[in-house]
Image (cartoon, rainbow, N blue to C red; front, side):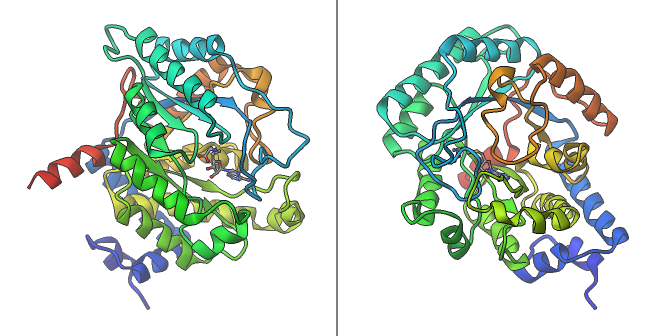
Length: 369
Ligand code: SAH
């Protein structure tokens, strides 16, 4: 018999320790993991929750990930790209409401026109959202996929300072099962390295509950985050989209819902316990599974929430998975709702703050010695 308390009180963790923690099913023991994660979050990051307004500004995509609803082969999706005014308006709303940071997310494109567009948007956001409370404007995070080093540098120099690029799974074998041949695992890893090199605070993450994904794969995911010196983590359950090649899993997944949800929460807690000072998001996919999913994420050690700012008219066109919440709500509804939800967990929102990951600075301090 392993002793969960012994594992939790360690400072370093082996792969088998992580697998042991992931396999815990007893409610009392899961609670111990959750409480330990919360304590570690409190010590390393504080209890405040940071907001990033999420603008899904385009669903055009050159990639064809088998799990994703906006993959290029899904001809049922009406494609859109927001114009500059719409994006700037959302960004200003975000700044006026004290969010402090925003995330610009889209499907993948690598053409010059697209990069020029984002570069211009970032520059404009940075100048137009400056105020006494935010002297350097909103913190801008990008989530626009695999790019060249040159493009990453352009986007960084335009003023964005954080970048999210999920590895999706750290198992090269599983990655190959989930993507067409021209999308390579190695290239994605390379991009994460280029992002670090550029100077970005780098976020990555995985989906939890893929077919054939083992607890060992998930333990390796956490070790991958550590090895790659990642600053921010966004993870969530894999949810079937019925216009994808994986749609025939739909029935099987109905039966696995509770199991996958629990596993996703355990992943958040264990990632917090192992990585300590990183930012971890309680993602929308958790809420798509269960209405209180994001609040649960906060209780398991997450410290970031990304309320949706995408204009209501196009939200429906950006469905990565079934059951995306808040489709017909306005940003202001989401704002009030999110405040209530966060306060219901006993936490407070850090207003007008970028909320950078402590890891990024601790890391620089460490490397000074
Ligand atoms: N094109 C950008 C943004 C992609 S969407 C990029 O590659 O970075 C953001 C994330 O949504 C993806 O990285 C993926 O992890 C997640 N996602 C896609 N399909 C999903 C699904 N069916 N269930 C749960 N999450 C999904």
